[in-house]
Length: 260
Image (cartoon, rainbow, N blue to C red; front, top):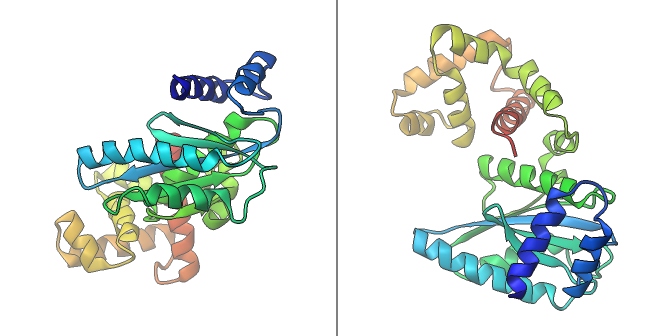
């Protein structure tokens, strides 16, 4: 019963804007949570070898993080929301290490078969929903960027972490377009797959052979497509600064198009 009430409370808190209303604060207090103080958001997901293993891991993960949170005051709010585990952690709660690290470790320890990934957003003023939105975006980017099994903060994401805090999809899109528009336009006009190739190239850690294998094409085709991208963007993918820019732009593009 209490688990259901926490889940309903979390849903209502995240769907509201600004400071929680007095009725929400009262409901939270009845469950032992003080939402009048600033809270950061920790979102986490698990991946297992089978659906059954993942379902079992979710059950154990929720229990493990709930047990972890119960020893801190003010008490963090832990519940499932939108298919992920969400923890609203009071910033005044004294911990010996970052809460996001503790949450990710608690989840990872429920089974050796699963991979646990967490992302953290600090308090965004009084708007807990905004902190959740930012953390959810960071989690999406972490998973797309091959950072599964870690705890990711906005600082870890560099310029992408800063952009996540804009809460302005138009600005995200504009940032990505500055780098990727020539490639996107070329694909649209010529029915090519340069964006797919570029995305796979970064997912495979700039390994052309691995990229060719994942796309089921010849390595020479990958090389030709990458050269075309360099020509279109007047940039060299061998330049570390360029690879960082393209990698960030790809993540932001996927985030802006796919949403959070």
